[in-house]
Length: 297
Image (tube, rainbow, N blue to C red; front, side):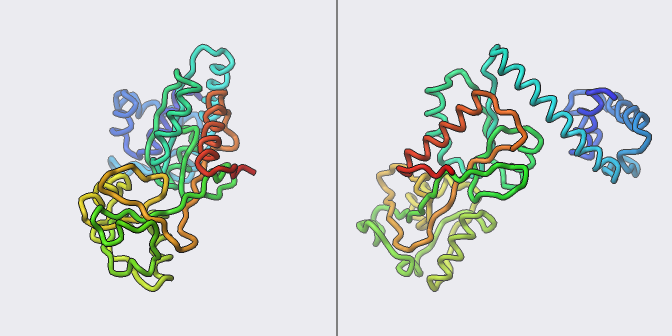
C-alpha cells in the first residue's frame, strides 16, 4: 500500500466524484482511477459502489476512510514535529472560526511575538470546524458557542456581553443603557436563524415579552454596523464587534444573560509546534486583557 494511494482515496471519498477529485489533485482521471483500482485490489474489497458514472463510498470505504485519514494525520504530525525541531522554518498557522471580530487584535499581538509566521484563516460553522480539526487541516478554532467533543479540547476564553447598536439621531441615541422591554417596537437587522447568537437573543427577547421584528437577516455579522449606520434598523452586537463610528451609538443592555462565550478549540492528539503554543498563549493573554481576569482553569 502506497502513501499516494491513500491520498488519492481520501480525495475521491470526500468528493465522491472521480472527475472533480482528479481536478483537485491535478492528475488525469485515468491515472486516478487506476490508482484507486490498485488500492482496492491490494485490500481485497471494493471501497465504492459504482453505478455508471456515479460513485458512492460503501461500508468498506467508510471504515477505511477513518483509518486512512488517521494515518495521514499522524504522518503530518510527524512532519510538523520534525520541522519544528529542525527550526528550518516558522511555518503556517491555520485557523477556522465562527466569529472573526476578535481576529485582527489577536493576530496583531501574535505578530509582535512571531513576525515570520504565516496565517491561513477561514470562516466555518461548528460542524465544519470539528471536521477540519479531526483531519488536521487547522491548528485552532475560535468559536461561539463552545462545543463538547471527546477528542477536542474546548477552552472558554471570554464572556462577551451584547450591546445595542443604534444610529445617530435614533430616539435612544442619547442614552447609555436600555432594557429589552423598551425595544419591542423596534426594527432589527441581524444574522439568520441558526446562528448561535441569533437563536440566543430570540429566546431572551421572547422571555422579555416580544419577538424581534427583523427587516434584514443575513450571514455576514460584519455588515450589521453599516446597516445600523444607514438607519435600516437597530442591532444586537457582541461588545468585541464594536467599531468606533461617528454615526453609530452602542448602548449597554440592562438585562442579565445577554452574553456569549468565546472558546478556543484544538485537537487533543495533535502535535502543537512552539509557534502554535505561543499563539495559544497570545489568545489567552489577549482575552485576559479584554476581561481583566483569566478564565483559564
